[in-house]
Length: 292
Image (cartoon, rainbow, N blue to C red; front, side, top):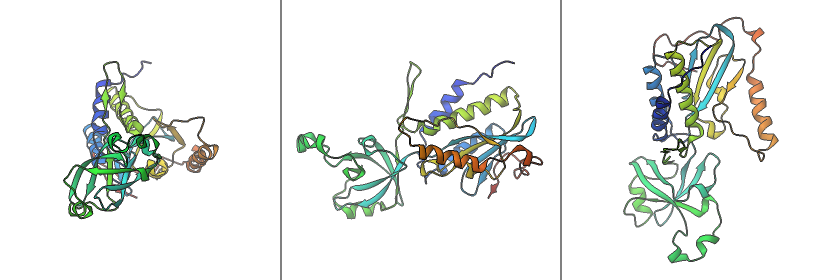
């Protein structure tokens, strides 16, 4: 048996496109439709669920026990918590990440008046103005603010742009593909996983490979908000076969690991209980069909 030959140029191209599409949790439509268009180009049938996730079935030699491969399109981000009197924006994080990694980030706030560029900075950003206080201020989201790239003298000017509480903020990925073979970027979790899945699908189709069992390829949109990836499939699967990026650290609590294991076990359905193929097809053509 020959090993599959992944097209690395294809993988890098898809990853670059995904990284440059803003998709914080709650603002993923553009990335989802870009992914749908690529699946169509590959000639794959897909289903777009009511919750916005994408699922693709690659038929195998056997229907069961089916397997699932999961990655998520959504990323970390932020949301406008308040418009300050000086016109700057107080933020809260989307997903769990430290404000220390937001300091200096370029970003876009999506408002009713359109998208506005800006920078997230500490409240005390200037060493000339605050001297050593720039190093003494606490690290939390109340200590940073978003400054929009517009002439703003106060709160009324910001509101006049259509920017208000609840608006989504997307953080620039700033991807860099180095000559030494490294990819440095924000949001590689989990757009790198999505790109790897696309590259694997492209390879299997190009080389006409058939998996041993039916395989579900799931692209979800709310992982950073702690939504279970198995909500994306209403079909019975034996287990999650792989998650392209699923880091574990020595500091991760047993409670977190056990919760994820319990969520997985709750969706595991023994092969003996499957009497046939996992659900009827709801997409009879290349394209999407909304399902529950």
